[in-house]
Length: 130
Image 1 (cartoon, rainbow, N blue to C red):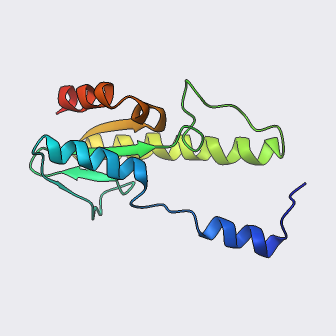
Image 2 (image 1 turned 180 degrees about the vertical axis):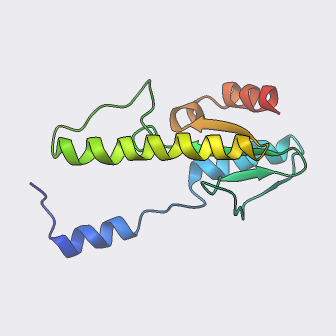
């Protein structure tokens, strides 16, 4: 049972950012330190978080819960059927968008939320991918 009213919950959810989050800012900082030029305003399928200029590479920074990270995702106990449908539709949409981008000739890099905890590992991953 939710302790907030429907309007309070709606307000709280409306405050959650979908762009320019701290994980996105951290990855952009790493790219800047590498001298990599990028764009944020993408009209590509799936609206990638970052588009690398001149390399046909896009980066998605995905939350472990919302995109079903194989290492950290745990099914919610409350309202399980709703969340199962929601998360599975996210995963399916991710696969479709990844396939569309590859068909258009883009390399797709996915960075999980948990990978931001170790900047040196993330830095190495980005360098290897580029």
